[in-house]
Structures are given as C-alpha cells and as structure tokens.
Length: 142
Image (tube, rainbow, N blue to C red; front, side):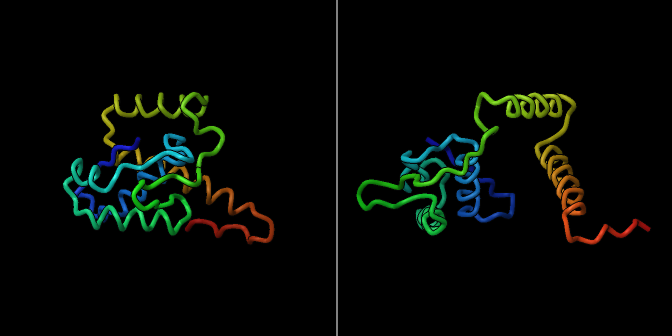
C-alpha cells in the first residue's frame, strides 16, 4: 500500500501531490492492477488533510482511468503505468539508486537532484527533438 506524504510548503495543492505520488507509484510498479488505495479516512489520519481533498484526488485518478471507486469497497488500481526498466530489480533502477546515493553523499539536496535530472532530461529531449525528421536544425546560440 502507498503512504502519501504531503509537503505543505511546496505550493503544490495536496490533491495534486496525491495524484502525482500515485502516478509515480504506478510507474515504478509499487502499485499494481488490483491493488487497493488507502481509504480517505486512512489518508486523512496519516496526513491531516481534508477528506474532500483525498476524494478529489481519487476522482481525478478515476477520470484518468487509473483507478476505480467501488462504493463500500474502496478504490482500486485499474491500470499500470510501469515500463520495462522501472522494476525494483532492474539494472537501470540500481544505477539511478547508486547515483542518487552518491549525489546525496556529496551534499546535494532533493531539489538539487531533481534539478539535475530535469536538466539532463531537458537536454536529452532537446537533442532528440532537434534530430527529428522534418524539423529544422536548432538556431545557433548567440
């Protein structure tokens, strides 16, 4: 089962944090089709947020086709977002885990690590997009 963590200082609404954490757990394979999400009451007890906030997040997940709300039974995962390479035992996952461990040991904070990964993804995507057929070459930097 997933344990939600709400960062009140992030500026991101709590329901969005729940949606994002659920999607991340689906991508990483922590949640699988058929798994039951915690009840709104359990999330409220763990995070001290309003029950309507949890219900809004669960409705958003349902509208995205990721979960199904079954009256009286709970909320269940109906679709996975996991991709090959994201499994717990995959070599890519181990490499990322090792890299994060080294980055943290060097004193980088979570935001620093996220910024580095985002910058690397952006650079990769920019490079990949610039070589796409039918796209003009990128303008030289001035």
